[in-house]
Image (cartoon, rainbow, N blue to C red):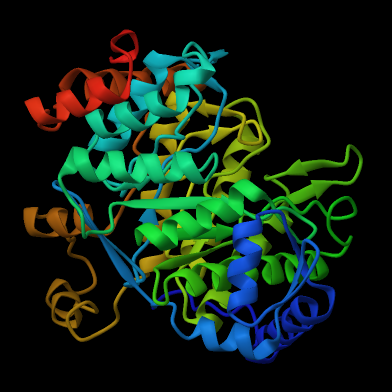
Length: 458
């Protein structure tokens, strides 16, 4: 017995796809990269100025090359995307860090700490150089710092740098040299096509580089705010974003047919009173479930967001919105979940304590969605008959079964928030104290020293 998932009808997905083809053929998409426009044109697209028009046949012919699954291989880890499990990905892009209700501008120490937490977490599949912005690193060195320190402190698959084409290529080549791996999928690029229907020069060039370097790519369009940069209705916002994502996917396949792709859809709800993005608004969770359906329609792995909340405190709103968004990810069966643990304040802050709480929430929801089996063994009819009407079930064998099949809340919370902060803080401190770094060879040290000034090597 378990929950059964059903969100969209096949006809609804087909209609979204057909309308997306109409948009790409007749409205087109603005592409600011000349090299990308030339690639589109070479492969049969119509180009007028900076606008590219894609006939349906070109879209359909290239979509069939996208694999339904792929695998990352690093020296320490093997992670498959599209095998029915959820690839959890770290927090992404926060500028503030918080611990024990004290918020501060994120820095180098926080970057290293969260990279270590991602490495040791049994529930985190990947690492991420964008886990937060180390604001005490000068901007001229920050991208290289994040890439190098991410690889030094974690041997899990990670992300490329996607500021522009050259930064993406440099990070891919640095990771290959660092791990001495030329052929494996080791990095994934995360690009975002702007709404409405604009592919920036840097975005397009990153797509081209990932195709040329044969590294997986996550193609998203998450900037569409209903009534501002996207139509006001959720369905129309989803449609225009789907068209934009398809354009990015097709460009990648033009460069390298069969390039692993993740269909990305971090669309957010909107606060109609302030005209701000609202990750905690319920429509965010609906967009996640719609994206999961479209991914299955295209037979492409899907990415969603994670524990989104607009709250700035560990309060009721924080828990409710985090549960809603995390549940939508796991229930709909997304293949990749970014911002897996620790995010709050509309993605502006990564919270140490919440990271631990979100891990527990993740386990709770997985347990909930697994349901329970009903068969001759689990119904225990013989034991019920043997015990009869008045006997009890107190014995060690039953205690072991109870501990296996029930998963209570792991924190005491006897004195409210202070207990939660103390318990989660103790878990964080223990993990950081017991962290064991991946092997750091002399060759790797030389690569880092040749890549980053010594003053910024932690």
